[in-house]
Amino acid sequence: MGVVALDHVQLAAPRGCEDRARWFFGDLLGLAEIEKPEPLRERGVVWFAVGRQQLHFGVSEHFVPAVKAHPAFRIDAGELDALAERLSAAGIEVQWDDSLAGTRRFYMEDPWGNRVELMTSS
Picture 1 (cartoon, rainbow, N blue to C red):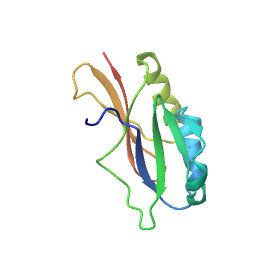
Picture 2 (picture 1 turned 60 degrees about the vertical axis):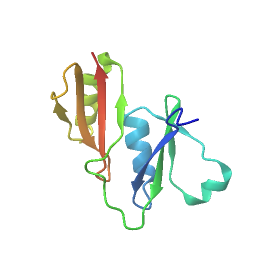
Picture 3 (picture 1 turned 120 degrees about the vertical axis):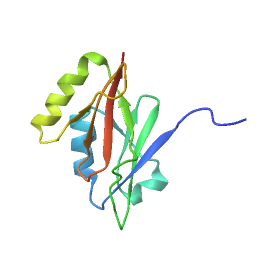
């Protein structure tokens, strides 16, 4: 027995975050929104597919952004610079980090201040 895969990651967000989540994670990052199971729909918020895994958002009444803990999304090497430019053009600050040999990556914040990493491998 034991853990066999990562199913999903959940990020906290403030109430009413759905439109900004769709803009940032859907429109800018290109994640496909997936339908939540019926019993969970009344809670609001949105879910996205990330390959075989999922990214869920949960409303936190006393929301505080995660400034250190974060999801890291791997993308094709040829798309990293174009995505960084698209994010910058949308007003998202991109912070490049070259401290990990063989990996190109940058950090940014989602609309509520949660840290997010985008990376490629060599």
